[in-house]
Amino acid sequence: MTTTYDLAIVGTGSVGAAAGYYASQAGLNVLELDAHVPPHDAGSHHGQTRLIRHAYGEGDQYVPLVLESQRLWNELAINSGQPIFHQTGILTVAQPTTPFFTTLVHSAHEFQLPLETLTAPALQARYPNWHFSDQYQALFEPTGGYLESETAISAYLQLARHAGVRQEFNQPVTGFQRLANGTVEIRTTQGTYQARQVAITAGTWVKELLPDLPVQPVRKVFSWFHTTDQRLTEAAGFPGFTVELATGNTYYGFPGTDGTIKIGKHNGGQPIRNPHERTPFGTYEADDHEIDELLATHLTGTAGLDHGGACSYDLTPDENFIIDYLPGTDNIQLVTGLSGHGFKFASVLGQIVADRAAHQPEPFDLTPFRLQRFHH
Image 1 (cartoon, rainbow, N blue to C red):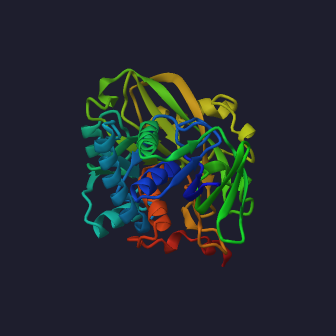
Image 2 (tube, helix red, strand yellow):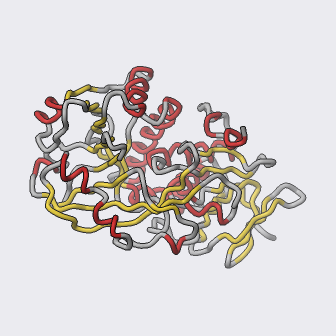
Image 3 (tube, rainbow, N blue to C red):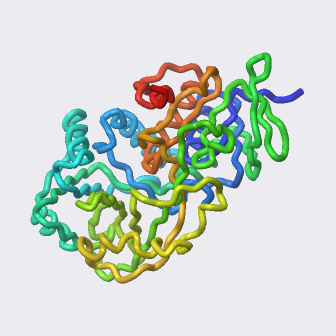
């Protein structure tokens, strides 16, 4: 007899790993599939760290999700005994009239989140390495910080394995179809599986399975720089940060550890069509210079590039997530288009997948994330 799983997960990276664990906790018989062995560097979840902010410049619709996500990350840290979350605080610097800044302030007010406003001189007094003209302001959120991304995925996978989840990795999914009885048949390079429900959480390469999705893969890089100033370190209380400059460029970064500080540029990157185009750091001359503008003018205490890495974003046209069912189905879930700000939500998105698979009520309004918004 072929096993028919309650839930099969296609793509067991950040969201998929969380979904598999939470579905197992709901008593479901779960199959996890991935083209590689997660955590791996072929998707969007590697590079050690990801910021988590609660007041949210991308829109109020994200705040209930990220607050529940934070609760789940804290719970995962307890259940796994791993260091998942570092509460370093998050600093957001921008001109106060920008949409991101005003939305962030509004979301903090709306959900009564702690947020401190600093003028440019007050910012420099507190963190002497930052240098901004008076046209900028800073917001400090003490409850934010960063997540250890690969540690978190490994923790979910290990807990899922202990709960009896079947993990079939190094097996790219080549296709799937709904059978006459409503179950879904999934084909991989090594076999065929059946499941009553499927969650497609395949990240950047989701269009290899669903070519019509409004998702554009983009190659992104991030860099570690040598630090010469102890004030840039986590131990000294330097926070995670996002900075939106007057030029429109947006940067993010983490407190320094082990003599380096990790910084990336959120906008830009190279649109790509297949995994071969997501080439290593240094392939483009621009890779070495992405952070020049920030370091030359606004942040002191670094001393040259140590190394860099490449990853990818799966961008939707509006840079908001897709959380929906595949059109015409009620048993093929889709979580994709996380657009470079999704990792912090992986825990709650996994819980949502598990709740739907277990026919549990949803405590969130997911209307803003439906596919139909692109068809108007």
